[in-house]
Amino acid sequence: MTEGPATLAAVEVRKRFRALAVLDGVNLVLNRGEAVGVVGPNGAGKTTLLNVLSGALAPDSGAVVFNGQVVTAKGAADRCKLGIARTHQVPRPFAGMTVFENVLVGATAGGRRRGADAYDLCLKVLDQTALTRLANRRAESLGLLQRKRLELARALAVEPVVLLLDEIGAGLTDAESAALVETVAGLKNAGLAVLWIEHIVHVLMQVVNRLVCMDAGRIIAEGPPEAVVSQAAVIDAYLGNRA
Amino acid sequence: MSVANAILQGIFLGAFYAVLACGLSLMFGVMRIINLAHGDVAVLGAYLVLVIVQGTGLSPLLAFVIALPAMIALGYVLQLTVLQRALKAGILTPLLATFGLSIVIQNLLLLKFSPDVHSLGASAGGLTTESWNLFGSISISALGLVVLAVAVVVFAALHLFLSRTRPGWRMRATAEDPDAAELIGIDSRHVYARATAIAVAIAGLGGLFLAIRSVFDPGSGPTQLIFAFEAVVIGGMGSLWGTLLGGLALGVAQTLGAQLNPEYAALSGHLLFLAVLILRFGGVRLVRFGARA
Image (cartoon, rainbow over all chains, first blue to last red; front, top):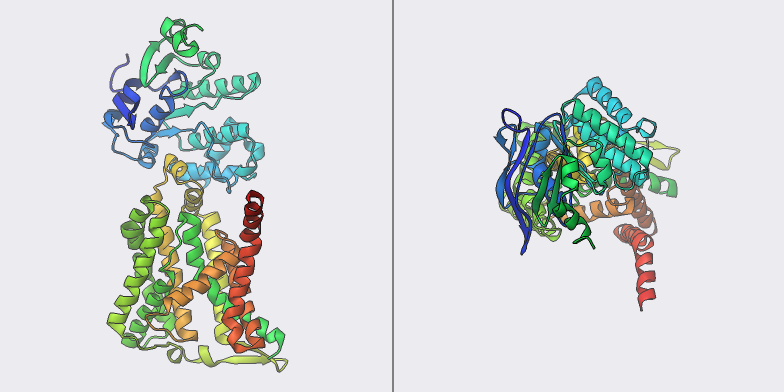
């Protein structure tokens, strides 16, 4: 454990949808310069956890703490301005705007950049996500993988401290995955705190410092990636009692 | 009157409809709210200008400049108090809320100003009387030119605002996906309030033109709403430039109809509206229902 308050922490977070406990007392800590992977079967509550952390969803109980400040009551826009950005599993670009405008609106809204400063940041982010060639295309004309890159670019344009990634690696080729891993590693080394939900464990393993495995709204295993994937509980959760 | 002159008069009339429709189109485009009180807000703007003209003796155009901050503030507060709550409650609630608002505005105006008919035509001076003849049969009125020029400027300014400014980018992003916009730090409430403020201000401008070119009373709003709504639908809902073209098309349809018989003016506008509805939506629906049956 590092000194001082965690960059982002979930404390005993609970969320029910009717009778179903989607998050059942989740505790999670995320620090700067660290990438944490989240794995678990469908319905484990991974995306819900991300929604609660980003402010898209209010938890029933528990708290979200950012740099020692309780932000549970703050909405997504306010949390973004504090430095928490996320991507969606199903990309949600501003379809009628160009790729550049998508990134620019992030840089000027959440990132609070102006004028040439904003444009410079956008160029950097587009370069980082290999979207420069597509900058003037309307977002609606992009393919799924390009949309995923745009989702990442738009989140980076707000210059976040914490980056929450929801399955941006699904469907990528090996070369694309390797590029993505390199990008995330770069962000981590630049001092960002990255929380990355992904089904493809071997991709996560290449970059994360810790791995968290969720099942049925609880964290069932947490620790160094190799240790977590070899735990019996994790294998059970994924493969259903070694079927 | 020749057909060419009728078309030109239709364009002048259509520019007025386009100004009326502009705010309606913006609110629908950004928030998916169909503001049934839009016509009444325009009439409210006309009364506000009337009060200022009567109190100060200024020309209506100058009086509108004074009324403008009040209209902007009204739109902002209206969004934050009434419409924002209505938006949270589902898609039907804003329709009911603005319908209620329409009734409230009409009755407040009735209470304050009586059902008497007013006009600002006389106080606008030369603007309403000046006109020039081309080739003997084509008449160009000063008011028509001014309304057309203002309409083009308003739509161009709104276009530049949406495409070139930071608040404009935020408005477009929020219109596309308010939740995703929140996640990159955009406060949608603030953006919506801005959109309504702009819409109400431009509605006030429409009210000003209504008051100068014609007469108005507390019940004039719904008629203006119908023309504005038709302009929006003819031009394609959610498209700003479409609304300008839709307004012009509606105006031309009305004056061409009036060529046949003055009683056909409104009717031929409605027929164009119906034709667009059927061509754009109706045909597809009919085919689908047919396939199911």
